[in-house]
Length: 429
Picture (cartoon, rainbow, N blue to C red):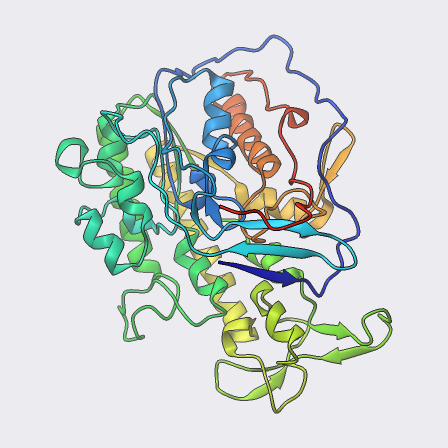
């Protein structure tokens, strides 16, 4: 089954293929980097999730796979998901007169390389929170408990290879390890419009209604990093921190006020919604209308106080404060614990913040945080495009070069595909 989404915001430019070339690094060298075995622990951003699904064509351009190529770490095994993958794949259908995206119904595929007799090198599990790094509960039960099919699709036999993500990573004895978890400990709350979360209930707040508690997050990170340090004393470990999600297209594409009529931006119409306190009010400049609100708004919901948007479609001022505080808190923990354990912190918060403020220029091309036209994000407005993943891989390479006496070549963005051109008609699966 497929659904068609027409966007309220017109997308003026589409970035498909680059015609520029990147400058290669002179005298490349690995320095102190031993490429023998590279393992990546993370969530959907590590897995290579794009446009609402995990599928092989996108996985080829996951940042860990690109990084493995640049340092020469082979084989780098990922759970190869045949097209259209697992999830709800978004496909661009048209740009004019309005941006139109088709979303195919939920699908679940099995990796084509399940015969691999060891853990995968890419241990990115979409939806994983920090605790999943050390959680040794049964993966099938976890999949049911969290309605997340990715645990058994990506983790291997627990009795043979290790009960937790960390144990499966350690079983491979990596010489290079990237650890990028913690997003979903706050993103799940943000992406739900403040209606769901990952907190345990410690401190009296209802479970599953807020970001993970600071004390819980700190304990998990301390435990996970200590296990990595003790089990892999010679590995080079790079830790990514958490980007500021509120600058992502999921939160910035739909404006707080709508032009009315659509072709006259000088006249604007307020958007009404029911806030977290249950009161009907209008969206202010410090609040965010989620990308998921588009169909509601097109049907007339949210355009008058008698038919307000549901709270899950808007992140109000109080919820914004919760998100910002959690990101700041979690990043301070990641920085402190990385330093304590001698790991390299890769400041992805700073990278995305810089792109949000000034864009990202490479070989004469500019990338921005804009939906579709910016080139960084895929069609779900949250996960990176293939080129976005290449820029991310280059950030990790930069950290290696600066900290490990290396001079590793960067990924050339002109070799990475852009967002696919409009399909023109629905595809059949």
